[in-house]
Image 1: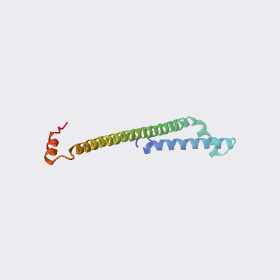
Image 2: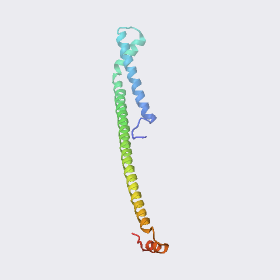
Image 3: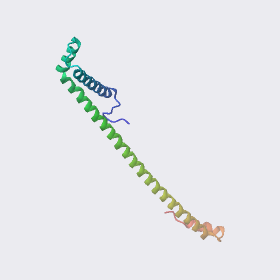
Image 4: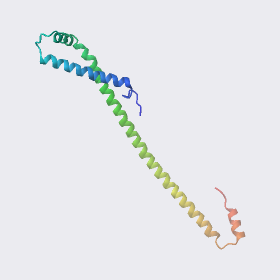
Length: 140
């Protein structure tokens, strides 16, 4: 089943995975800054500068992650609604099929009784009389 805005599109999944990746990197950066806050290493100082001055960059991945989650729930809701709709139509079809089958059985039984009644009326008559009676029957 393909719904609009579905997560089946590779570009949609890519945005979500990128958002998760950026969030993980951001959390790891915060953890590194908390573990060794007073290091004099050049690599640590560069890392600290990048993380502290580029904190705004976390807004975009977090927004993308929230949007990805929203779309995922919309897709699930569409799938649930389609399943409910399918179950309802299947139930309606069963009821209709049963009603049609009962109506056909009643019609067959009624016609059977009519034919048997006609045969009983013809019983004991000569061929000529039976033929005349059959020809007298009018079609509705």
